[in-house]
Length: 84
Image 1 (cartoon, rainbow, N blue to C red):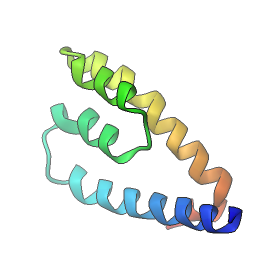
Image 2 (image 1 turned 180 degrees about the horizontal axis):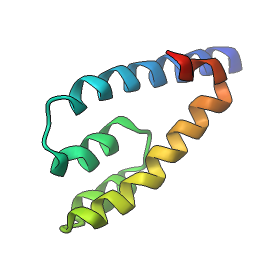
Image 3 (image 1 turned 135 degrees about the vertical axis):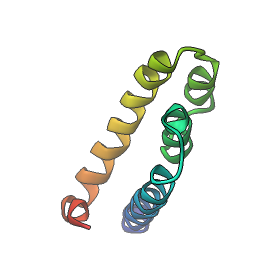
Image 4 (image 1 turned 90 degrees about the vertical axis):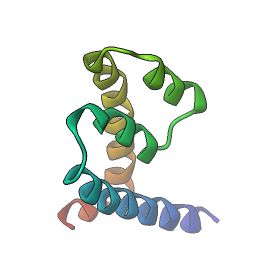
């Protein structure tokens, strides 16, 4: 079961990175925190805190830790996945 979970996490990470790359090329900067929040695994409360922030700098400040947490999980599960 743990192996299946790891495979799921790796697949989710790859999908997230691919989707993020496509989205980032086509959206205005003000939407980046919302997109990042939608791609990472975060609680409902964490995502709502991002949406509740009105100022763009606050949205980025709340999104960045979630994104870094997701990246750390992905790297710990598959260090070679960063070379995709």
